[in-house]
Structure formats: C-alpha cells, structure tokens
Length: 268
Ligand code: 4G3
Image (tube, rainbow, N blue to C red; front, side):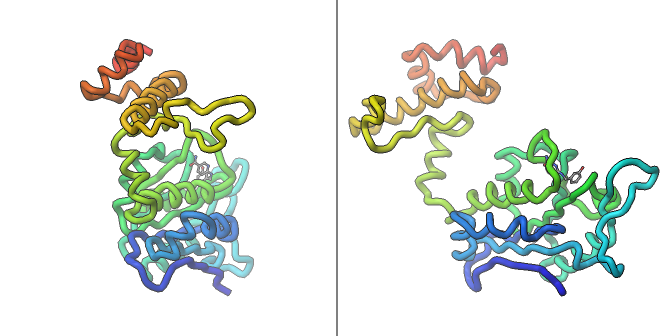
C-alpha cells in the first residue's frame, strides 16, 4: 500500500509545492499541521506532499538500504527506490528543483531561503544511515544543502527547517507589518528585545521609552538595542553592514560608532 500523504487546500494560488522523500513520513506530519504552516496550507499558499521511499522499493522485504561497497560500518541508501520516487513526483509536477539534505551540502542561510522562495516547486530527498548512494547526488540532485555543522540521524528535520523558513517568506503568509520591519530597521542585525504587559514584572520595569508613544524615539531605541546585541553576540554580522548617515549619527550619539566601524572593518 502506498503511504504517500499530502497537505493542500483545493484552491489558492499555490506559490510553492514541496515534495519530500523519506522513509519516515510520519516524522514530518505533525509539524506541518500547526501554526503558520498549517494556515499557509489552508490558504493554498503551499502544498506539501510526503512520499515514503519504502513504497518504491521492488524487493519483497522493501529494503531501502544496503551495505557499503568497500566495507565499513553502517548502511547506505540504495539508489533505485529514490529514483522511482523522484520519477513518481516528476509525473505529478515536472521540473521541480531536487535538493539533498546532507552535512556535505552548502550552508543554509536566510539568503539561501530567499533564493529558494523564488522557486515554485522543491523536491527534498531525506537521507538516513551513513548517507545516500552518491550516484543520486551526481545524476539526480540539483542542490545539496546543510542546515549547519552538525550531524542528524536523517535529513527529515533539515527538510522541515527549509519548509518553515521558506514558507514564511512567501507573499501573504505573514502580515506585511513583519516583512516591512525586517526590510527597514533590523535587516542584517539581531532583532531588538521585545516586551509586553505587565509594565513592571517582579520589580523589573519595561524600558520607559517604549511607553512614550513617540514612534521615532522607539524606532531609534530599537535600532540601538539591536546594534548593542549584535556587537555583543554576533560581531561577524556587523562586518557585513553599512549604515546611512542618519544611523551613523545615532550610533555616534550612543558611543557605538567606533565599535561598529571596527567590526565592519573586520577588526573585532
Ligand atoms: C545524507 C543533514 C543524509 C548524507 C542530514 C547524512 C545533518 C544534516 C544524512 C549523510 C543529516 C544537516 C542524514 N545530518 N546538517 N543526516 O543539514 O551523510
């Protein structure tokens, strides 16, 4: 029995179709059924199809892995079931970009997420065990991505991270307020700290400027708070930044101009 599973609304513009090939489709289901991703599916902004690689195995034990040629520890995923699953996806929607999630891939960043958000169909191959027969990568994969320098038991959690980070970039998925804020003040910097009620919590008050209703002062405070946090935690991010004259003046008034310029010259 085929165990392929899909999440999609009947209508909607379908900005993006994701197909995910895995031997553990159940691992991916519940994260796709909550929150913003669930809403994006309901609104028809994305469609997610899960395919069990095991369904495409042809031997009677439905094997998807085998011992490595040349000997050694662990198992390697066989190429035939993966190719059969890719052909199946290709019949439903040809021309999708095929991505292999692996620690050997190019490093995933917000910039890569923005690049992939411009595609209309992504097909993700989740490897398990010690990896996937390399002929898949050589002849069927368009892009190999790593979500970071650590090893997972499989590519499934990495695939979810791509779906999540790409979906929130699609038009209409988040409110325009969020994306506008990202584009003006906080791009390239860590996000400023946020507060909500109560005004005083266990003797700790909210920064008073946030209660003034003075939008310009609040925006300036947020910018400076972002810069201070970025300088302390991620000076490497500041090395990529340039500031307008207005922001340079604000940095100067807060004693941060030299610090940020040192960082942006890479001396930090
Ligand atoms: C393929 C991705 C899959 C080859 C997958 C291991 C970490 C990441 C796997 C391989 C993974 C990551 C499964 N671990 N950093 N494990 O994106 O060698």
